[in-house]
Amino acid sequence: MRLLTLLSLTAVTILSFGGLRASAQGMPLPSGTNIPVPRAADTPPSMQDPNAQRAPNVSSGQVTGGGKLPRTAGQEHRVYDLRPYTGYLTKYDRPEQAIIDWVLRETGSDVWFTEPFGFMNADRDSLSVYHTNEMHQVVSGVVDRFVAGEKDPQVLHLRVMTVGNPNWRSRAHMLMQHVNVDSPGVQAWLLSKENAAIVLNSLRQRTDTRLVQDLDLVTHNGQTEKLASTRGRNYVRNVRPAPAGWPPYEPETGEVQEGYQLSISPLLSTDGKVLDCMIKAEIDQVDKLNPVELELPLPNNQVHRTRIDVPQVVSWRLHERFRWPSDMVLLLSCGVVASPERPPSAVPMLNMNMFTGTTAGRADALMFIEFRGRASENLTTTPASAQVAAQPGGPTRGRY
Image 1 (tube, rainbow, N blue to C red):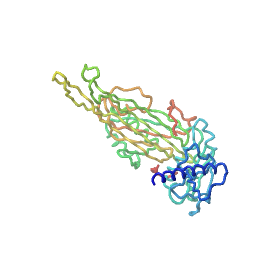
Image 2: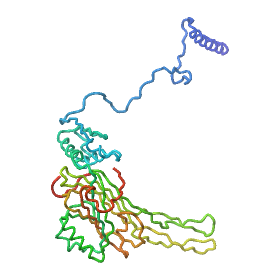
Image 3: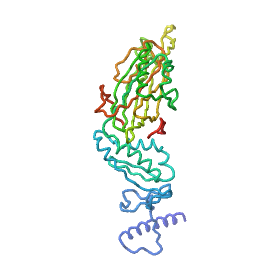
Image 4: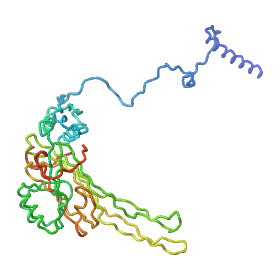
């Protein structure tokens, strides 16, 4: 009985393969023959039809296409011509970025990512904006300061000084108008050019005052200029076993980058009477290296004495936007900061030695910023070779 069953299964298998062969040749199949149909997943890639349609990838989120831009708040699309400004800046890469930056400083960035719907896009020739009429008025005011404002390079005069004792304020207090600053430890004042000259003369008469830099920074209206000077300070951060065996230990050195980075972006009003200026400064310096004595074992049961250093780093940050009449002088003080004693280094401008006196201790670092107008008319010293990144009333601070 078992033998008959096996013979029957063999016959069915032969019949199935014969049916497949007959179907492939277009021959009629015996009635009642069931032909197994292979699934696509079981078919080898070499036997699959290359022209077969595959199911498109389905997005996990619902996507709608076409339609009109929303106008729930009366938004409208306007295109601003930037060529009267960008046409002068042939040596700048993407000069339109300065306009975008200043629009964001004026409006904030949230209004472009929340309701009502809006967008902003720019190339070298035009700025495309879709937003409400109120927002267009703000954008238009910023764009006008670029396209209808000064096209020639302008000069910002920077003077950096250090004073050993902050009591210089006692004589200068009545000559300065205080400006609110959000950065911790930073103070700012506005002075007329006459009062600024009096304060400078008073500082020069002090024995603890040192003039560090006195330079002209040339920049185009609205563009960001960057000055940077950093250097590495080496120290022993670890002691490890020497691979040669003798001496038994060797020092592992590290490096702390200390120095200064400054970026300034001035933007004049259309009539040139008011100056908006974004100032960003980052300063890192080593106050001192704290020594730590180590006692390391030797194979002969003796002790190897050595030392590692732990850096004590002082940092200072400023990121503020100031607005003041262009005929006045802005004075910034970062407060009394570390002034470590070390040999001076040859760095070109606004170097970290501005915080270094003749003796170790602390010093009050001051920066005078004065707008002097067109470079062609006011250059009196060699201009700084900066690296190119990129409203009336009392002084105010912006959001961006």
